[in-house]
Length: 329
Image (cartoon, rainbow, N blue to C red):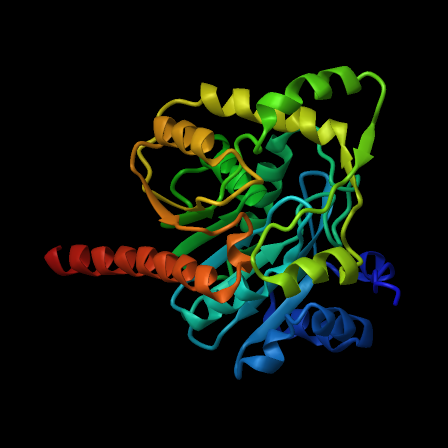
């Protein structure tokens, strides 16, 4: 069976106005409904009173496919930033988590991913990911309520970390990163192969590996997701290597951070990454999930539930601290 690729959607995406009445009307389009249903993110049908805005935001030189889900009385906003090769369609669990916690949810496809413009799965610099996040936030800040929190997975975590230094460490009240990327698993042994191949190859065939204990998720990504890209661009690897050097050069930042990490992760070098992150952000709390793989927001329930429980506690602790401060003042 052919994978639905929704090739006509990117060109048809209207500008997102962040006016719920205007933005939600286009969501009833038949192709949009097919897309939302295929990825099981038709949440406006699932959650009474939630309005879904969907369109494009011009940011960092790209047209970014952007969604927001707005409950009737949100307690704040949760921004969800996806990982490499991913897109918003794969983040139903994270989107539902945000809505179940009472937040408005904002999410977009990174440049070169999903329905957004840009060379497939490629980027010149990780700065462009952070710039895209910055401009999407600026587009939605007048409508989406504060406080703002953020949830980033893998490369989405790298995007958020870059944003903290290059744009604002104050925009987000609380940040939770799942298996954030600084360098990938096995980078030491693959380093020489990369440098030898770089002058001759622009891309290499991607090897699909299971990143979750959820077999249905792994099967869907490999066989049913038409928005996946089957190659690894060498340019992206170059940008990722530069990101590691750039991150090491950032000054120490006094910002609370939660990192949730599985100890069976074979996608990122989590021991190296956690050491790097703690050096730059000494107020980092690390919550380990024994036996969990890389794609924590799409793990099987025995692993995924503790992930979201830890994030919920982190967000709720922030609100308790804010309420206590308000009472004391």
